[in-house]
Length: 246
Image (cartoon, one colour):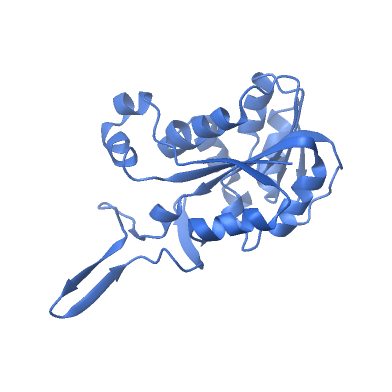
């Protein structure tokens, strides 16, 4: 998993000031829709980052929120800024389990950092009370199965061209693979792409029951704030939201 500690302040500033359209206009609203009314609930957050979303959950009425992240720099910020929540610096695959302690677990854009999910699923299962809910968001395989080129002219292409010279293939949707990328101007990250069928296989191998799966579009406000972004992601998915139940 990527260590964001060296970029913790920049990461926190981006999250606190809502600089990511993808996060603010698609992923976060979809996660909040999936979790529903959280008043008086105890919530575990995996990959909590600098704690911004943990604090938002408290503001939405959660009774207790505990966040886990492997980046010490982010946890240091979270512990300093959001004292109504608790935090621990741990790997979500091997984190300490408080059995039957939470009504809900949220894993926002974190599960694709780990190659196998069953260890984490097992810990979440143990931490949840009977009937507890596990909501997780993921990079959508359609977008991140594409060939992505960043720069002044961005492209994300998935498909193929056939011509006299042969076939040119863009992307690889069907095969599980590790993707290397660079964020924040220098942070090297690695995450895993896998098809929707492989994602569902992971879920079905766990003890959880799948309640729902969604491919959210941008909220209406994005049409006013960034029309081009809205047009693209009203047609091309960026995230996958899964809701599971113990």
